[in-house]
Image 1 (cartoon, rainbow, N blue to C red):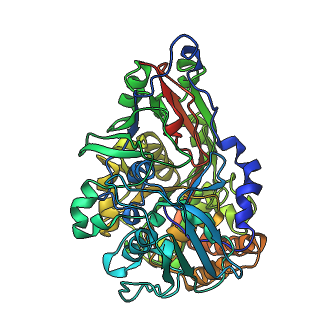
Image 2: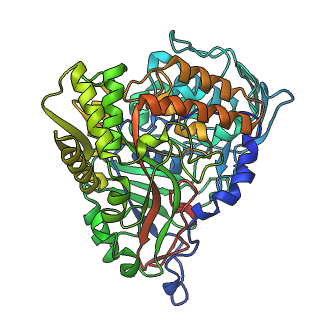
Image 3: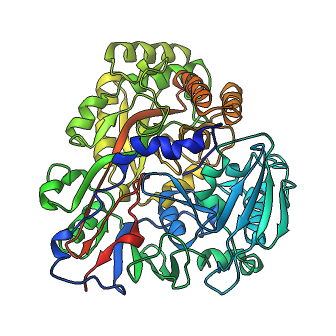
Length: 542
């Protein structure tokens, strides 16, 4: 997960998209069949599924879903997001500006990290400087790139745009006005860190000290992480349970079976093998609703035949038109996916299904063959086209279906390439070691079009694993971030997508519904606008 922002009025997206995002806040009361006969136990531990994090748990370098689920549970920022995507103040008492460029942030008194250290202005300033410093190469650094003094090219240990006023007040000067800037502040790149972290960051990443609803009890790598309630937490996300154990499953089928047998309390994904049965298997304890999730395949620009040139454009377009999205979403996903028509999500304000160039997402076998032939005339493609995926994410069936679609349409060898887990796949992506395409996608960090675009396609962005670079696109992103209204910004993001449809740095596939289930031991299960369960609100009987 990663980001960039849009202009004035996006703060209003929190309110304006409350309507469009209403469908993204879950059913609100799962497992209610057992709540009337047994009393919830406030000390009970909630169990859920997850993935081994890619990196040590330092907030500014935790940008994928597995680690993000943990970091969001053990840290609290200036603001947090409600179920509908709107923001609410947490550590921040107020966030104000008279010109949308210089922001004054006042903190509430009494917030503490779980080691007893107070949360102060320095907690934020030090953490943000750590994340922004290019020498650290943190994945979340570009979230901070519009703070005055930020540089992608040279290390900056202290951003001049961050100024301490007192222990409970600091100012942030942006490089240009941005009315929507406060909306991003609930994301993990903006979390505070205690002074104790900086004496040994490696050790801290293994046993992070946060200020959120939960704290780490133990972390058994590649198995699970145990979190317990932070009794001193002062924010809105006060847990009604005793803790959260996140189990790192290598198979969604195994996790699903555990949920069926009440050995797993909440499963925020359903394996494709259960798409036709999960609603009857968990009647009254399931969710199938729109979510801010986009899925794609990415073909790195460093691969032979797939560079940012005419041949690369032809091959990417051919592959896109060779994929029968309606058929795959119907047969493989049983209606829990919708064929994509852009690079973002229909639940986000500003989404459009009619961006120029989006016809490349329509299945057209004849044109796909023609385009591939034109590319071969430039340089003949030989070998096997592979699509890498993580086996612990339930992707094999659709990857096989896409590969078969490419085989049958283009007459090439195509197949899936399995990695054991998400962390190992990301490791090779990060090191530019991919030998073919790979499954990709985005689960939103906050409700804005820019969240689906700049983290993935801006030059040098932390989640730009395809290593795409376009000055035109970068310029449009910059203009959009400085736009005077949310509507103007969205127009610029749509213009950027017109270029993306020509270059296809990623090939959009479909939008995901949030599909999840829970055991009969829990109640009050609700999924947020970003598809993540609100763990702190879940009740469990002993």
